[in-house]
Image 1 (cartoon, rainbow, N blue to C red):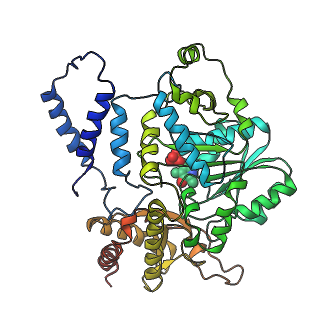
Image 2: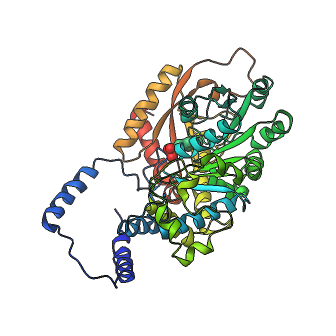
Length: 469
Ligand SMILES: *Cc1c(COP(=O)(O)O)cnc(C)c1O
């Protein structure tokens, strides 16, 4: 592992934080540091039983290491352990959440909106689907068959009917199939995924919005994984660029700072274009809001953006939430503002460049078959192994996955329709049915670009082990 700058940065900031509370009488925390040190050694040993997610040779699942500033800020906040449910439990961190969410909303051109952090993308999506159900009870939710699996489950939890819309051979929602569902006039909300989890496909948001005019339904953008690519339209293909350009027209948006936003887990975000949906969250709480409603003590409360509630728990389905997640996000966005052309955006573009380069090499190597319809839309690459049958190709992918891991290159596996790998424009009826196991690589670390040669060499050598060529 490389030298970790976090402990020394954290030590200095911790002194500052202690000084902030320096006026209080000192007290001892009664702990046995020797015993703790021993337990921590055992803990570190246990943690060794992981894939090395932080390393550029980890190029498998959607796992991106948090930025050092996020790790340090999160750990610093642990001294206070704020709870962003209410100002009573997280005064400073509630302000920081409001500011950080304001910057995220700004990416989509929203200034007057309702939004907050959640503990995950799933919870954030749940809130968006819940609001849709409140606005149009009894109406269905629809999303593409490549939408995240939790939409169907969330709908079941909310007792909303859910229907899957077929996807095309790139994993994008079929607008024709969507319109067929819309003609039944009982669709309350369409979930549009900008960046599907399996392949990074971009649903045609602009076309779905055009249908909204005609059929009247809510449009929810699930950008849990892909939302931040809004910052680099110049690096995307035209259809994806049009979809991202339309994001501000959606009714609600979910984006996960803990996916592409360099945050530790526990950080999703939901945004609603119409702040009036806040009325659905209204509730009475006999205990949590008491103190700070009585005592508006802190001047920062008066700096609140217009229309914000005093307590984030008043606009959130969750009660306790990690204030530390907001602190880490706020600090990260201070260092790396969410601006097109900025360092954060350049980091996204480097992962995307790595994906395009890997895809280019795969296309030139007859051992591999990438998606027939074209190159990756974001930074996820999927490809099957070339073989006579899909069963053989699936077996080879599994063995290649293991052979790569033996060379410290960690990829992922994914089941995809075998038709996606067959030549486009083939005669109808010739398309093979069924699924095939493929290799999948999420190249979401900026370092993946510089490491691509080493990734390729390992992949290539591992495939020699498996294929004998
Ligand atoms: C990861 C993901 C989710 C779920 O988010 P969690 O933070 O894992 O709960 C939802 N939608 C998409 C498109 C995702 O990629």
